[in-house]
Length: 277
Image (cartoon, rainbow, N blue to C red; front, top):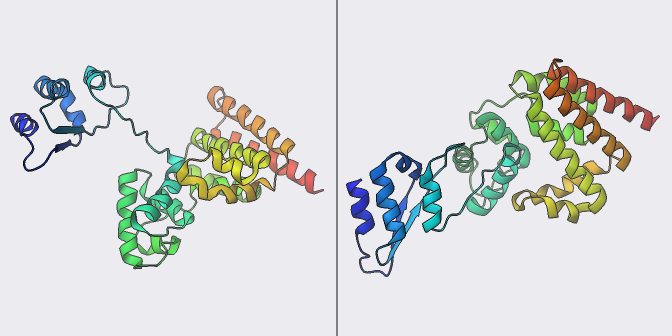
C-alpha cells in the first residue's frame, strides 16, 4: 500500500501527465487502507495524474468501493462477450489487431477446444498465427495442428445445422453435444438467437441482419440470410413458438432435457417433410 501511495503521489517527470495503470484493482476492495488511498486520489487528484483502475467486479458483489469510486471518477463498463458471440469476436479481433484471417469454423473449433475466455483465445490465435506464417489463413486444420483436442461437435456448427434445416444431422449429433457437457437450457438460448436472426433476415435481408448484429459479427450476415431462404415466415414462427414451449418444459418438467429437445427437432423434421411433399 505504501508503494501504491508513493506511485500515485509522484509528480510527472519531463511530461505533462503521469499515467498510473492499476490492473486487477478488485484486490483493493478488501483493504480499508487501499480504498482510502485510491478514493482520496480520485477526490483530490495530484496535478498531472491520470489514474486508471482496471477491475473485474465479482458477480453479485456488494462492496461499496465500486459505487464510491464511480461517484468521484469516470466509470466505463466493458461488458463481457457472451459465449455464443466469442468466435465472431475472435475473427474480427484477429483481423483488426494482428492482420490475420481466421476462418469462422476455425474460431468455433478453437472456442470449443479452449473455452470462451477471451484472454485464452487471443493467446491461442497469436500462437497459431506464428505457426501458419505471414499471409496464411488460420483454418480448422491449423487449429488441429496446434495441438488442441477439438470437440467432436461444436455448438455453433450445430446451430447452423438447425438453421440450414439439416434436422436429421442435428438429431444425430445432439447426444454428442450433451456428452460434451452442453446443457439443454444453453442450447435453447443459442437456438433462440439463431432463429430470431433468421427472422430478421427474412424481413430485412442482409442490411436488416447487419443492423442487429454486434459490429464484430456483421460478416456473418450473408450466412444467416442464406439460412433464411430455407424458411417461410409461418414455419419460423411455429419453430419459435415450439422453442418457447420447450424452454417452459425444461424449467417445469421432470422429462430429461435431451428428450424434450429431440421432440422439438423431430417436429421440425415432420413439418419439413410435409413442406417438401
